[in-house]
Image 1 (cartoon, each protein chain N blue to C red):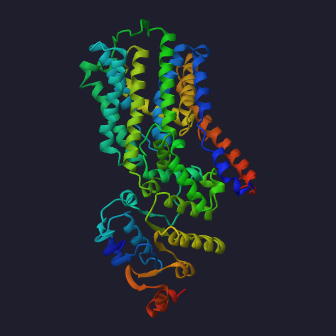
Image 2 (image 1 turned 30 degrees about the vertical axis):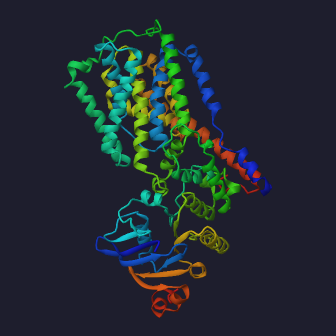
Image 3 (image 1 turned 90 degrees about the horizontal axis):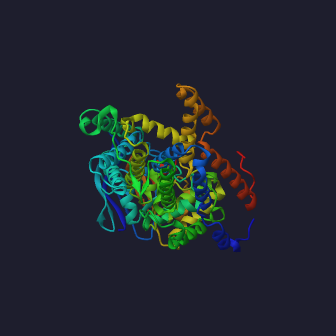
Length: 338
Length: 246
């Protein structure tokens, strides 16, 4: 047992350390990714990774399941596409418009549905997502080009470098991803980030502490939509067109799957989940058109081996190890489960 | 009166859980609510905390009506409750549990600043952990604490919200005799040293009679008796309905 006189020192020693190593480690891997796998696949991973980072704030850290995140992703994609095609907007303006559109939609859906809990919120968000899909499919076909998707999006240059080429596009998306990773890290270390986790753990208790939990959920949804809108816009730049499927519920479902695969509620989990999913999809689809069956089977296998997702399970194992060490250091007997 | 109710009632589909109860708590006092199972103790407690609205009647805090305020609004005014079944944040560390509660009176919607830099909040959280004697386990996950320690953490979370009135719902439930005595000492310390006004719902009569300034006895949702511990324990009706059957 440590000397009680030592209390203050111990407290300073174990003051929450920002997990900078994880952030910088992730950044380093991403820096060389297009040389390990193909640049287009690496770019796709980053774009979906940004989407996943935001989605994870809502699902993983706040504990709110949205089944309609395709709405924000798709709206971001279409807003950027429309701005680029019809208004000849600049790169930054189109990104700004996409993010603003997604955030406004989240404010609207949030104002209507945020008080619903659990599966009810998931269903309402799904309904809104599908509503947008059918709007783009038919009533707004003259603008969105319906099933064909929005094409003829001009090639974009950044400082006279064409983003039509894989490597410059990758590093452009990479810089934005690093920015979003940093933003996510700051949010998670902030009072609001801690509040999100408290809300996920015990909403009733958070309320009894004096927090306006409805507002917590609302902000989490809006921030998450911000990420999705940005990812949608980047996807438009990457593909050079906007497929209608960006608004389809399957996009939301895929994102749920990717996040769970990587480990919801973990910092790098969504990126890992996205990476594994897209890598498997790209690799297996070369050999068979029925790649979904194999990806599905591998998904089941991974979840059986890593019940809390890949990163989540590793974190839990580390956590148990750390607790054992703390118990030993403090002179307590090992817990029964250990 | 610091906290009081005026003919407050709560009916659940015909069941009168609380019926026309007048409750009052003086500043700095410790008042216990006792009664048999189903007497309406926790319901009365929850009505004062804003968990649900009353069917009729009013709640006043410092003579300001707070009847229809929500749980979080009432907490912000300085009335904080603990739960009969432990409500903590299990996947957060012991320190984070208390720190999150402490930040509720600061800027919780700050998205950028690191919590490590909130020195006042962190200092307060550490102080509270010392008060509830969990300082040695500050880095433990809350889910790994024993039952008694979780009850202490529950009190710590409540204290971190800077309450003026603390509503404690069976804080010693499930504790051993030794833990119960320590918990009673802690409650008394909070009441006498920190001058916190406390409402205590408790089944353990040795705790109630040992530390309360006043006791309210409920039976079938109505007030049966009220007074000092001695007056209540001498009351024949209370002995017949509650104390006698123990």
